[in-house]
Amino acid sequence: MAETFLGFDYGKRRIGVAVGESLTRSARALQTIEVPRGSAIPWARIERLVTEWKPAGVVVGVPHHLDGTEAALGEAARAFAGEVTRRTGRTAHLWNEALSTEAAREAVAESRRRGSRRGGRDRLNAEAARAILEGWLREASDV
Image 1 (cartoon, rainbow, N blue to C red):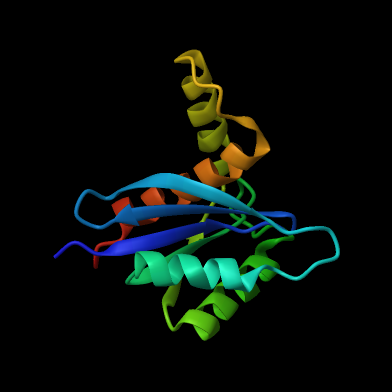
Image 2: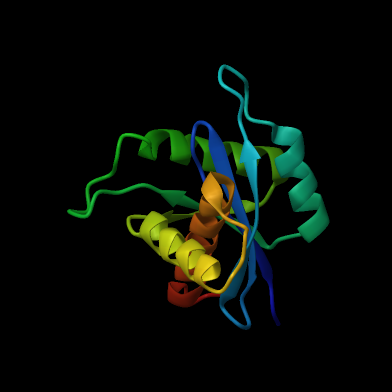
C-alpha cells in the first residue's frame, strides 16, 4: 500500500517542504515556509500541511559535511524533527542531506533552461526538501 510522506529542508530562515509517496519513491517540491528574523517557526503552517497531506511520517534533512561529519545546523535540525513529532504525532526520520542543495540547484537550473520563470531562493529550499525526501524514499527498505 502506498504511503505519503512529507520532507523538510530545515533552515533558520527558510524551511523547504516536499511531498512524496512510497509506491513510486518519488517526491515533488511543495513550498518554502519563511521564518522571519527573530520569529518562531510558524508551527501552524506545518501542522496544516500534516493535516492536509496526512503523511505516514516525515523526513527531515540533517546537514552533513562531505566527510560525513554533522554540520553546525545538525543539532537544530534534529530538534526541529523532534518538535514535528511532538506536535503532529508523526514519526520523523532523519536523512543525511549532504548533497541536497546541489541537487536542488541542478533542478532549478534545469527548470530555467526549459523556460520556467520559477526559481529563486524559495524554489531552492523546496527542491532541497524534494531531494531529501526522494533520497530517503529510495533508500528506506521499510516503506
